[in-house]
Length: 249
Image 1 (cartoon, rainbow, N blue to C red):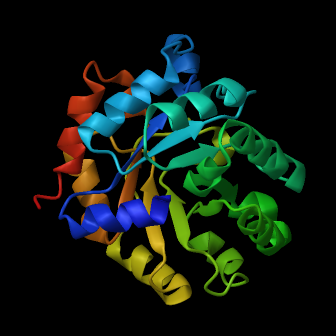
Image 2: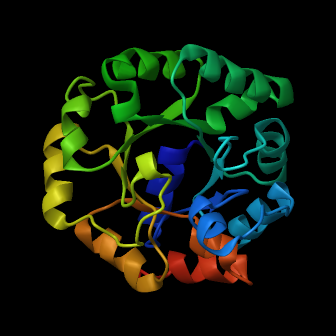
């Protein structure tokens, strides 16, 4: 099952689709508190997320700033769970797409369909339509990440080819160092809907509580991506479970 299918299935069951994230290094906590790399086994953590009811796993594989280990962790997560996998890196050219296609194909060619690559709209700019097409041609899905309404013009070049769009509540250009605050509103979501129709919208980052989860869902997001709150939790499965049930369904 791919990520948009899993999200829609969770919504049909009346629960909040949670994309649960694994990241080796959290730049904000490393800078402010000296928090070291997280060395837990990615497959075991992903399995806990699945037990809690997550709709998908997000894996930060960017190496320089987030300490990612794609060759190790991508296989570990896919082999430990049956969930779709969102791979988060700064993908700026087709060579990086080929890199991940090679990892996936080397594990099991059927895993390619479970994979989604993150594409940052403002980083790719005019290259976004071609990069999206290339990801699709490799058999993977794509999540187009935006910073907010200021990036809607990038989506206008895609027609209805964008099946999933993310709205990051934090500033990725600052490595998400800012304050945790869910910024999306019904008005923002309405603006996106005018551009992308019924594509899946994921509210990303800054979710620390069930109240934050509800805020995103009530604004109109289809799913919520949660990272730091889960990485800091002493009970990852239980925390995912509470977030999945946050919508009251």
